[in-house]
Image (cartoon, helix red, strand yellow):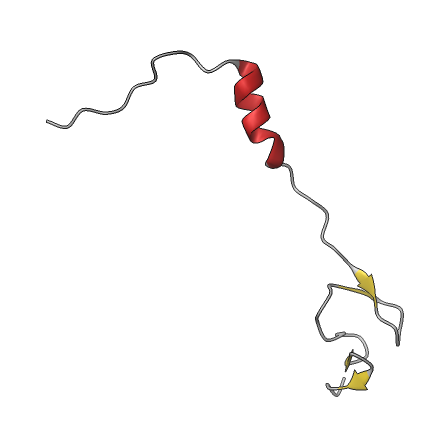
Length: 60
């Protein structure tokens, strides 16, 4: 029968919460479309006007 690892000492609340300090959700990074000024994620085609890097790439 396999033995399972068991902690030798109780993890303190401070250590546990410090480990979880990076778990918070971050707001998505949004930039402004230079053509229509809509907020879009970086490196994506604007779904409002169809421009990417100053060129029309999508017919909307």
